[in-house]
Length: 283
Image 1 (cartoon, rainbow, N blue to C red):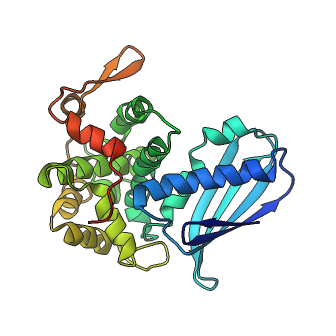
Image 2 (cartoon, rainbow, N blue to C red; image 1 turned 135 degrees about the vertical axis):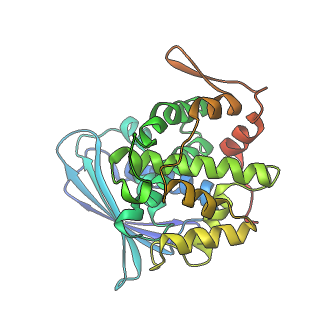
């Protein structure tokens, strides 16, 4: 079946039988698309094919995203358990994550942390903006997982690390730091999303053959800043130190027992709130 998402077309192939209805599957795809649009302002590619394979089980499984140069379309392959229910789909982040990969170049493997970090960081924010997550859930996830993105003693920068933690959460931490710094330097007028939108709109999507360095230079140039390139030198080329407790304290993200409490009189609480809710148009 086919879907129209803004100005973009999505064709869905289903291999095997799912116990959910086509309408429920369609809602899952539309919800994921809306989360991407909430972050990027639009769906990144004009044509995308989603290949759904029914697998044993009741959860959303492994998925990948790439670009088919011959067919000139994005391609997402995703495994969904044949016994999945609508509640499991409603809480699944997988398809949103893969759709976000379509908005950024398919970079060299030792720059993969940047692409994975962007998708890891932007996915919950997009889903927050569509009402699928609470702000407390988004920040709790970052507080719990960003420490695994910090370099171990003697470890290299992100370009030469390659561990799971550095690839996903080191990349997500890079994005968070960039978002905060961009907002500081622009008095909260712009954020990371505006740099990423500029990259995609300038041609740096999964359809391109851009390098990571070309992409971040384009993002910086669009904002008139040097935030992404400076942070890249600090974290990708060297094992950059990040004082996470201070960062959480300044943003007003406080762990109390097993929960996260958001403190609105913290020094950077206004930036935290903008990250949560800012859906401004492109600069």
